Structure formats: structure tokens, C-alpha cells
Image (cartoon, rainbow, N blue to C red):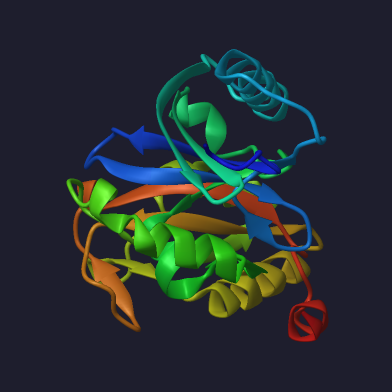
Length: 235
């Protein structure tokens, strides 16, 4: 007989299908980012109760995303924790401006390698669990994640099409370089800046350049500050 459940961990994922398909996983944002978790009261639950509770939770937390479809895929019980996998279908063009939402969608690269979205850290528990189940998600390419920064007068255009080419290539940066670019650009025109986040379809490298528009995909933008450097260093 299985032990009584004490918590549910939700693994919501979506397949970003524009250009080159890749996985993104929904993480709940607080001071850190991690898979959404529901703590259960000490009582008996049947599967129908659990599915209803979980799907209602996802509908609430993802309510800002357009054309939302939530589909149960699988479950796994580990001791007293039930892991539930849901595939999320949504309007990807709507999602890049929704970093004010409680759930942010992270790539495999961000969860396992950089362990940040922007400079918001991803919990160790989230990284460990996904690494232990990575064989379930090896069928699609894993893009690298890079950033750029600009001021608000240019930000919506660049969030869709990238910054203008320099010497015939699109250039992307690490988060802090992009943050400094956004801060400087906003300060120079007396306006706000924002950091742009991209999936880049190339091998991971310290300095990233690509030649074609099809080689990258805008994921999200966020006004600065996200976390100041001092706040980040205190985490």
C-alpha cells in the first residue's frame, strides 16, 4: 500500500513550436523559481480529487496566458510526493510579455545549466529532479539562452526581431552585460530600459553571434530592475 500523499509537485511543460521546437517548463516565481508545489492536508484523496485540484490551480496561475489548454500526461509517486506532468498549449506570442505572471517558462538550459531566468535563481530541487528525468525530454533540441538590453522606445520591436545586426551578425550576451546595456540605454534618453531574453539555436558559448533570423527566438522581456546586483548577491 502506498504511503499517504503529503504534497503534489506539478511539472507543467510546453513545446515552443515556432522555428525550431524545444521544451519550456513552468516554474513558480517567489524569491526563487521552482516547480509549483501543493501541500496537502492529512486526509484521503482519490485521483479525481487530485486532478481537479491540480488543474484548477494551473488554470488560476496561468490565467494571463491566452488560448490555454491543459492536458494531463503522466504521474509518478516518490514516497509521499506525487509528481504530475501536464502539457500546456498556449499562445506563444502572448507569453513573452508576461513576466509579471506568477509562472515563468524556463528552458532545459536554464534549469540544468545556468540555473537562472534573468538573474532569478532556480531551486536546486528543481534542477536535481529534471536532471533525473531528462531522458523523457531528449527528443527535441535544447537551445542556449542569451540576453540583450535596450530602452523602452525600441524594446517592443527588438523583442520580436532582435537588435539590428552588427557587422552582419546578431549578437547576444550574458544577463549582466545585457542588464548594463539596458540601464545605460535608458539613462541616456531619460527613459526606462528592459532586458530581452532569447533562445538561440546554437551550441553554448561565452560570446554568441548568429547570422540568420531563424537562428534565434525571442522568449520574454522584463523591465529593469529585475533584481539589483546587490539583491542578487545576497541570495
